[in-house]
Length: 117
View: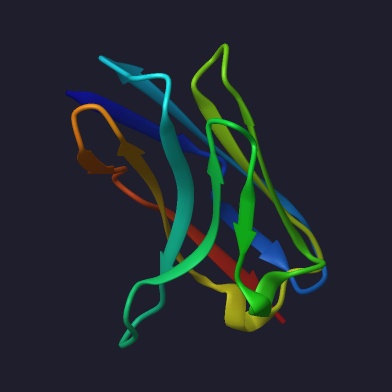
């Protein structure tokens, strides 16, 4: 089992920045993928960015150039630096952890990001 604890959400003005963190604990294999998804009211959950345990990243086109995902493998923690936030970035952001051995998928409880104009 893996537990995920998220932090860093909140209220920010348009153009502002926030940094989300998600710490994983429990039985974790060395091969995994950590990432962030988001879900706005009335919309489906969508991928924001992922990063593998080897450091390979994937970022949604809608946030490229503004959001940066990174991780600290020693701390099993993933970060999402969000800059130049827009109203359309407002959503509940969920941390995701995919473990390769055994294959399992975990979700954090979600953290609210609100962008005011």
